[in-house]
Image (tube, rainbow, N blue to C red; front, top):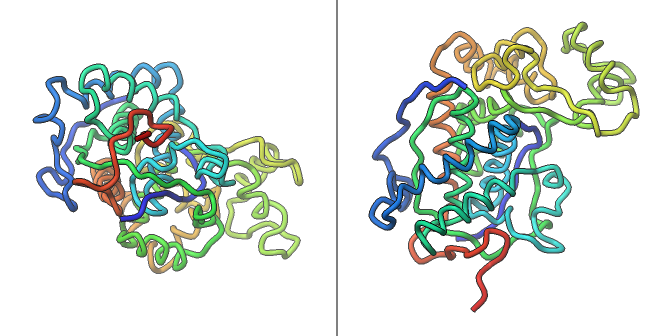
Length: 326
């Protein structure tokens, strides 16, 4: 299989516990892959590193969700986004604001102390993201492991779905990764803890589709609020929460869907989810459901199985930032 990554731009303490797809395998992935390979509980070691980072900076949860998406969406979940290099995926425009590499490095260092040469960086991304979601109020879904790390990371292949594409175009992009429209709606729910830079939605505030006018689908009070954050031609340094419920902007829940149903979506693709015939009923169901955390976890498990390397494919990197030397 191939090895690299890609994704959409938008970023993301209570603890419901549930199991997602336990016992089901995608390819050669399995639940508890390291139990027979390591004396220590590898997942607990990773969780400890993530917990320490989260309580110092809770926004790391959104960063890790974004990292997993960016790693998996090009050529599969192979940790190619972690590789350093002058033309690696890290250097592609959409990945310049990806962060959380320090968390993965710290987790890798910790697991190497207890299980040397066995735990892949790609599995660490998936485990760390799950733990961060749980700390942000989402359910603790069960992840599958057994991925191996890729050798190739190229900025030239990072082609990400734009936040301004249509729902049908987004559905097609996800379908190419084996993910259906429902998976897409749940995975975009990662925006429940995410933020977006002004340049990603400024056109909606001032010049929607080159009309010289704002996007008429946006709630007027939200528009005024966002204009105060993002003056016209101000650049992309400032950000806005993608879940505009101020009491829930850093919690993994279904509030994001309730917001877009009231025309308070920040990104164009988010807003269109609520009203496009392909996705409207799914969004409405999620907004009125108490099972979002469980279904979001299931979608993340499915994302984590996209084009993985297993068995003798790839390698187990000694450093997540570089391929192994002979």
